[in-house]
Image 1: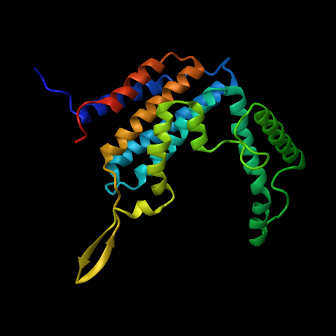
Image 2: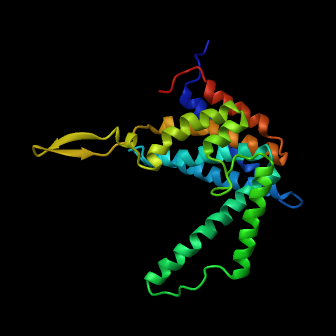
Image 3: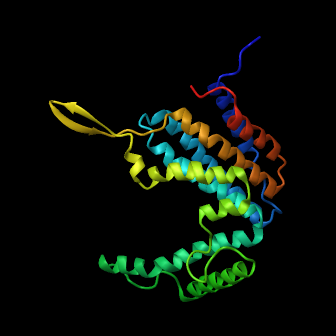
Length: 261
């Protein structure tokens, strides 16, 4: 009887299937509600990041850029799964947080331009600024009244950790506690991102050699289930009917019985 399929072969099959499923996110948005349209936008852009990770897994022999892209995939998977439990309100929170950041950056950006001898007038028209401020206040009140984990000031979105825990989804717990935590060091150049660097002697003197910690296949193996989960979430929110297929490949890679070579 034939032996078990090697993990590399299984992973390549799963990646081809995710390519196919991602194509089914390209649907007409005519008549679809705003939460679905936004979720499709997030999911399809996240899939382009996933494609980039797969390219970098081959192109970046050092294994440094891949973990940065992996962090983005984990972020997106957690965000969409959190949105799924209350799409209308949480999409409003998503955009209100964008307004909050625009408001916060307006004065510093005026100073930035003034320091360079440029026009230092308002970044936004008064009416637009008032509109954003009103939206932030309204959404914050509705979110807090609904029990969302945000404060009277500051961000209108919970932390990624709070989002992951709020879902009660074990896959999102893993996405945060494993993928998010591991990849964050490379995203922010934390201490463990330097742990694979080594010293080599050249001309009798020591030189630092920069190296990453992840082989390409390991990055792909971590990214694939998260991307499958994300596609499944988008499918449920938009009633696309492909979440079962996405879950099949999510579980297959997580539980594949043969080791990564």
